[in-house]
Length: 211
Image 1 (cartoon, rainbow, N blue to C red):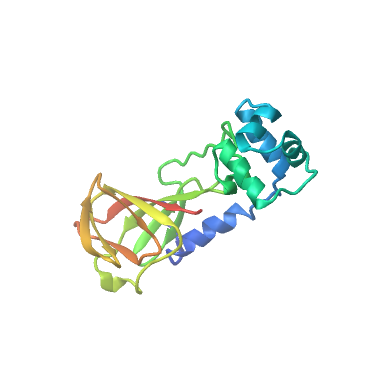
Image 2: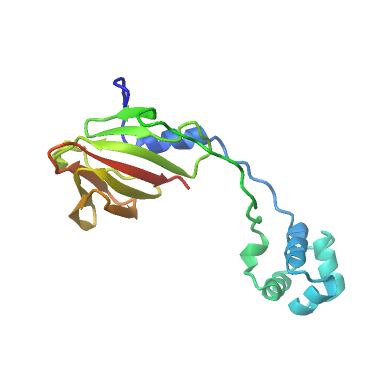
């Protein structure tokens, strides 16, 4: 890792990643188009879908063409006929196909951020809009007293011990020692800190969910 490291609070890594992602674009959902897409995905004609939902063909046609606003009862029947929940009628379909995103980080070339207790190397730093934040960390701390209280932030977190031995402290559980190859997955809103208990600084892979 580079010798020139920026002193940052470990919690700021989450802020850095979120800001790099930029604002999310939200598009309005066309209910008619969504219903038509769901119907066609099942290979149903208007008559077949209307029959499954217990609606008149003309009613379903008007819904698909945006010519009427269905009542909740009509939406409920339609969802039951399509074998989905009502909220799914208003949920955009998942994007299909690969988007081709790839980021490679050569060992030791990740952006460095150091604190008194951890030394982080951010991975995949050139990707924006990430849904998770991966980083390698060297654990400098040897005791809980070295921390300024608990570290806590939004999301969930996964860690994998790469070298050495660590002790994972969490707000609601007894401390646990983890060795090379051991891992932990936990709620990051729960207070947590990690210290090295091996002679050398331990290193771990940390992955934090950003959504």
